[in-house]
Image 1 (cartoon, rainbow, N blue to C red):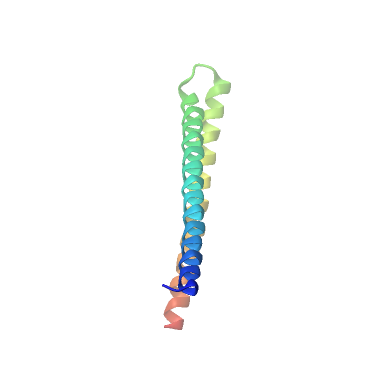
Image 2 (cartoon, rainbow, N blue to C red):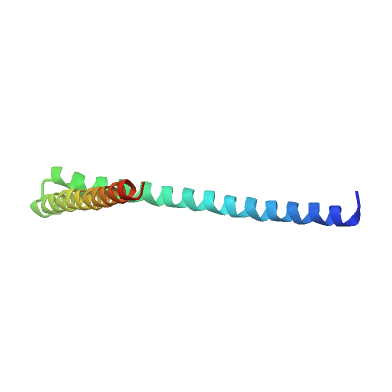
Length: 95
């Protein structure tokens, strides 16, 4: 193997190492978002469980939390449905 081939192999291995670091960073970021999502879900479940408390203020907070979550889910699904329909129409027209 000549010097040019060796330099090419070293450069190729350096690029692979950079890709591996980027992949590890993305996996860590996914774990971080997953943990945040779990804590958020647990907090939302706690707030919604306040419906079963004896005090009216806590019950009102629980009902408001459920109303907010239902509204949020409907909006997210509706926006996703609209985007999916747009994508389907554009794909049909293009192809």
